[in-house]
Each structure stands twice: as C-alpha cells, then as structure tokens.
Image (cartoon, rainbow, N blue to C red):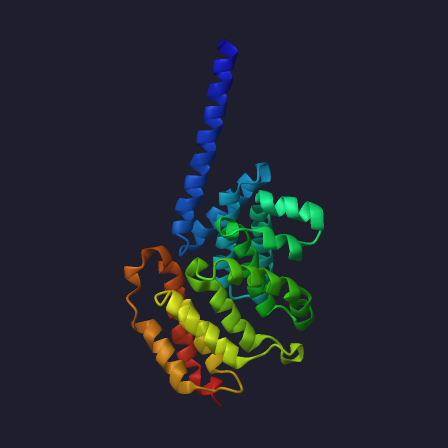
Length: 270
C-alpha cells in the first residue's frame, strides 16, 4: 500500500509539473509581442515536445513560430521558421486518433486529413497556416512543390470550420486566388475578393484580413484599386486595438504593415 501511495504521488507531481509548464508556455505566448518572451515560449515548448508530444503544447509552439515568422525580416530565416511551425503542427496532428486511424489505412495525408473533425481542427490548422506562409516566400520551385498539400489542407479547413481563427481560411483563399502563379490556371481576382469579403464579415476586427486584402487584391495587376486599398488600410489604422486584447499582437503587427503599405502606395500603383 505504501508503494502504491508513493506511485500515486509521483504521478500527481508529474501531472502538476506538466500543467505548470503548459501554463508557463501559455503565459509566454500571451506576451508574444516581446521577442524574448516569444523565443522563450518556443524554447520551453520544444523542450517539452522532445520529452512527450502534447497537443496543446504543440499548437502553442506552431502558433509561436507563425508569429515569429511574421515578424522576421530575413527571408531565409523566415522560411526556416515557418517549416519549424509546420513540424510542430504535425506533432499536434499526430495526437488526433481519427487521423492516425485513417493514415494507417490510406497511407495518404490528403485522404486521412478528411477524417479530422471540427473539434480537432486546430491540430491541423497551424500546419496549413505555416505552410501557406512558407509557400508565399519560397522560391518558385519550392512554392510549387508544396502547393498541392497547402491546397488540400485549406480545403478541409474551409469545409469543416471556415470561421476558425478569425476566418483564417478566407484570408488564405483571398491571398491564394490573387497570388497563386498564373501558370497554375487558378489565379482568380474575383474569387479573391469574394473570400476577403467573407473574411472581413467573419471577423471585422482581426485587421490582418484587411491588410492582406489591400496588399494581395487591390494591387493585383488586373485590379489596381487604389481607392479600396486606401479605405481598407485607413480602417486598419483607425481601429482601437486595445479593445481586443487576445489579438492585440496580431493587430499591432497589422497596423505596422498598413503604415508600410500606405508609404509604398505610389510604387505599388505605378
């Protein structure tokens, strides 16, 4: 009996330690606007994942890499960061039983991903998000090499939970239909605008949607809509981002991007 009690105490201690680490990671992520806090969130998260795959930790790490990639200026470093985010997302996805069962049968991610239900969508969303950003900045050959995977991941998000992460799938497809190489035959500014409009309607106070709308659609060679470009970015800059503390870092970043884009307007609309 004594040994049994000791064993229970050890398990309880391990669980509280793990939860303590998760709470620390969450606290650091909440302070992600500060580079040192963001890097510490990633360091501790990766350390924990090296011991044991935990979905919550893996998701936070994938999100942290995504945010870090958004604030990284060096293109090569940015690509490496997004790939690390993809890897963390894959670890989160590996904890989804329905996906594991499907992949063991089909051996194909494209088919197995269809088994991921709405309640598990976060585990795959951050693969899609990081991979999409990687594709945006990667050289043409690498961009094409991941295009198929990017597309079927986002197709599933659209089918299962389009409002997830402030209408994230609408942001993706808005950018996708504007920025996908014309050689693919999928470039379609009309669809791009439709998706961006849905994204703004889904989460009007998530400002990155309007920034990407202005950057990808309004400056498109076939569109060149400077009036809408200015309207969207001025709305971004007029927003009181203190009202939305959960997404303050993202909105703060969006406002900085909006200022930069407006400063480049003459060049963008030559």
